[in-house]
Amino acid sequence: MSRFAAPALGRRAFLRALGVAGGAAAAPGLWDPAPALAAASRVKGVETSAIGVTLKLELSQAPFPCDGAPYRDETVMVFVPAHYRAPESGELDLVMHFHGHVTTAERAIAAHKLREQLHESKQNAVLVVPQGAVNAAESPPGKLGQQGGLRRLCGELAAVLSSPAARRALGDAAVPRQARLGMLCLSAHSGGYRVAAACLRHGGCEVNEVYLFDALYGEVDAYRDWVLERKDRSGRERHKLISHFVAGDVRRLNLELARALEAQGVSCLHERRPGELTRKQLLSGRAIFIHAPIAHSAVTFEQNAFRDCLFASGFRRQLRSSWFEKQDEPRRIDVRSRS
Image (cartoon, rainbow, N blue to C red):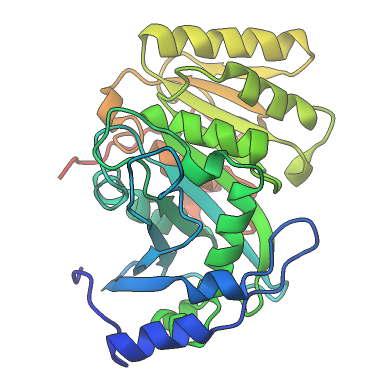
């Protein structure tokens, strides 16, 4: 995998093309039109590999800088898998991951094998990892805690990714022109739960699924209320939660959340031993709680948890996969190397 480099057409020309690009047309009530936002955006680098293209962006609607916080990094990491193809619907499906404490978006996307797991899931979606508080033992949401913050970030992102220069960098994997919001899934590891909860409360756009990786340290009401909003819906219309947990307070709060949902008529699935739930249950479940007897730092990737959440998601698949074979049997757990 090559390191980040300026695009072949020249860094200045690339940034200039992004700066003058028009904003993506917003689906009413979902994304804001963003020509002015795109003008304040820029690409810091492009990394290419056999599995896809990673763009390192600076976006004006990134979580930071934000009034009242000392953090200034505007980075948003974006990974588009090589197999991605823009759907005829013009919808852009996103999975947005919020990293934990004492790290950066760039380190988290590599350490937790997020790109590799999206690639292996074969889902036709784009991964977005905003920079939170840099190397800090806290996880304030920044601008994503403001009303409509998630909608504005997605709108700016769509405008930049649909620009001519970004489309050239992505080649056959270019995102739709004038992209509209498709499915939106949020993912959080550890302290990233605060940012995800803020997006559920104030984001201003529909979130379809949430994946937590030893992350439920609080904000239980936000996740409970979000699931209950669509408790009588089915298929892609529901709100689906998958929460992995290790031990301690996170385990306790997960069990409390499950009890609260069940008291409101939501059927919850529990996995107490690795692989106990079938793949069919992961596909059809509405609120799934998985005990992961592994290290907190590895819960996202060591047993390919992020990948399997994506396999079982409502994203619109276009590639066949053997993952769905024998889906009524206890699923095999694949262990991934840390290297």
